[in-house]
Image (cartoon, rainbow, N blue to C red; front, top):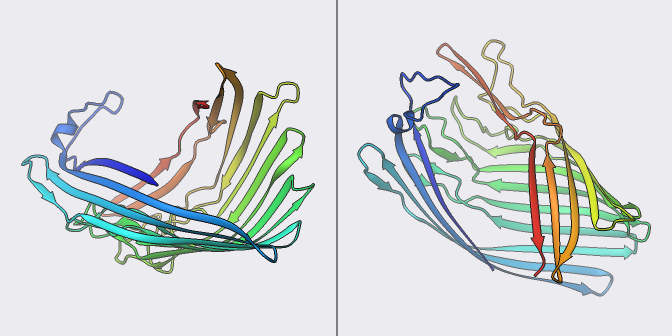
Length: 352
């Protein structure tokens, strides 16, 4: 069983005629330009059961079911008048299944199929103040697994179809700023190849490649719509590769060091992201990111303690996950949503 609660608050508004020194900004605008405050309270409780069993003929079956009880409250407050507008609450009760079948005709080879449904959560409010229905998804996957070196090296090739419904996108109506629409349905069909295992004593590695272009089946409409039926889902890379390795020192087994890199291809552009001069679409550029870690295991007072240092974006690369250009009425605004710079995180885990 699990319980998840969230309180969310969002301020929005327009800044008119504001002048500010960007190198020494003032916070006064927060009091003069905020028009509305949106509040969202979410409580999700889940209960799931799952079992895995071995059947005759080298068959293995996994079956599970999950029950979700979701309650969400929405309200919007006009900052100047303090008038509160309350939207209808959302109460969702769903049962989602999960089934997997694996057949192992001989030891180094396995064939499998999996089916799963999932219930998500509401991603925003549509005009004039009604919460969107929660997202939901459906997955089919078939694959082949094989192994070498007595199971120390494993490879998997799979084909899958993922369908997500009711994804939120910005309302294209210029009079509905701050509201979203549920675009309907997006489907991603693709393949994935992964290899992982122990290359030598203490040396482990994993490599993964996926190709999955997401296509919008049911989308929004209008001149400013960003998610349109028949097009690729914007800001999502079609190809992703990652490779990671770790090494535990033979003479000092308490220390493990490792790292790796990920690569994402150019992301699909939004239909509203184009160069206003050439009318060419604006793509988010591909990028590489490197990371590293060091892990140390020890004991204190009879309890296991683990320290781990993670370094993300090791080379401090500057990369953008979304590149957008908007034009019209004399405007030619282009901007990027930059990814995180180099960051360090130190973790400590204590065994109870």
